[in-house]
Length: 380
Image (cartoon, rainbow, N blue to C red; front, side, top):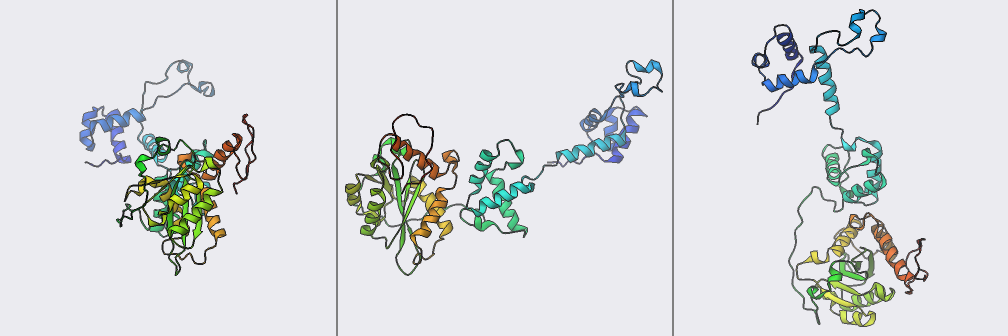
């Protein structure tokens, strides 16, 4: 594809002389300066000007006959004026870098330190600054800015990204041995209301493995509709330990908030029938090697890994410290929730249950009439 260079000042002087002194045609001028006729035509069209009579009253020295209509023939072309106008147009067309706004950079730096992803920041900016174009940026621009900061040596912010990768890369799956599960019910038998996330109270379950000397793990439960995360430290991945932890977690919730859960095919869920019997829940199982069928849980586990990377020992981790990590994750706005946080979406659902008369720990039971005041409490 041929390159294009803008007209120079000397070329504009030639156009001025050839057109308005020697009265050459546009094609003749183009041949002399080595440009296309359309370039010459566009240059003249952009930079021709006509004298104006709008300030006639301020020029009493002009003859009276010039005060009506055009006082000269025109239009005119001046090489110096054309060069000046072209320079102004070039200044206007330079695109301002999105991350050149100090307020935006400060806001993004604060959000990165809070653990927000670029997609979260882009969505929250639209929510908080709907009428400020300087505070508008896409997640791709944020990714590019972070990696550019690292490449030019300004500062390395890559550790603040969701996965902390040195560069963006494609995700790869892995294969493992399938563990037989007693009384296993396939995810394909799960009701459509669960799949569509229309109904509250359906969970996705998994285990985050630690890297310490002991076998401590984190049992994670994610509610599908609100993406609300509950994380519990367990001493091992054994089925009995996992079942006991699940019974405690779901036993503290109202029945309407614990309808079903979906596991992968790990051996830690082998005693799921005990949990089902004690809580009244149903358990479904995803297809082998299909983690995308439990995408919400996998995503939340990835958020936990931002604070506790793979290989991190969980031996000295306290439940209070894990609760703080969980609180931060549940306090991060999500695009899928309309940029609400999972905690806010969870509160809405729990308040709705309380308004329907269901006993909800931490929420006062309300009448079924419409209520406008939101309770600012957190479930126990």
